[in-house]
Length: 272
Image 1 (cartoon, one colour):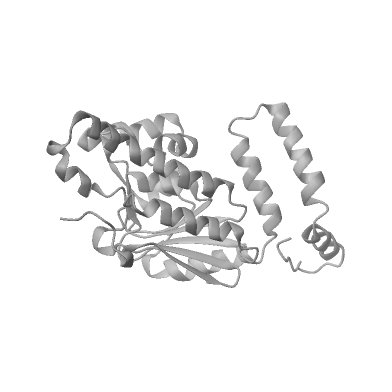
Image 2 (spheres, one colour):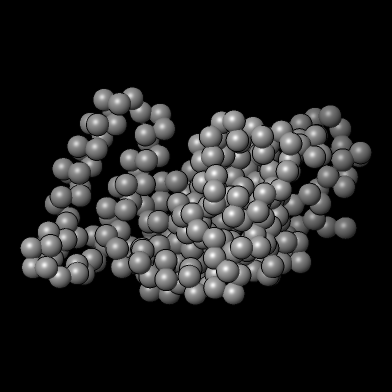
């Protein structure tokens, strides 16, 4: 049986003015991530990156679940693999996810994930590469690699400790327990939890705030926060000064923001 990804299961990229939306489209597989999605998703992210009109990127999952980790169908032939093939099969997914996450973290527009149902395995790492996460009450989260004697992939080991702390991340990874949407919010894995029937409406409200915000400044803030993970205090201070002075303050939005402040009105940002 072929393990190739059918075209109708590719992620769907749509543009609606300043909003770009990528929808995972394998509902019958709980949107499990297939390795053949990597070049497709990479090209879609580059297309978003190169579109000057985009001011926010939204990720959604078609069906009942957001992303149930990596597609495990390839392990069905595990017994037939040589040791070298098993090694390649294990090394491939983490490297592939890395290329996706690198583009997401450098993207200069805010990335929102609107989450329902399951977020498992590599899906947890994928959330880490997003900037903001809004989730339904019934959503659940599962770092399940340990249950099949696997170590982490999907950059879970990179993002999870930074989001929830070292000790809590180890608890989730070593025990493989599911957590609820509310617990995910309590530990900092998601930002907001809303009623299931309000997820779409609340996501729209959040996206509207972002697409009308100062996009250039948001991109600078994203860069600052990502680079703070490896910068020293002096390096971070210098970077703050450089980005504020060279890019934020001379921008049209900064001029509009200050003008609106003194005129006691709401600013009308253009994202530049």
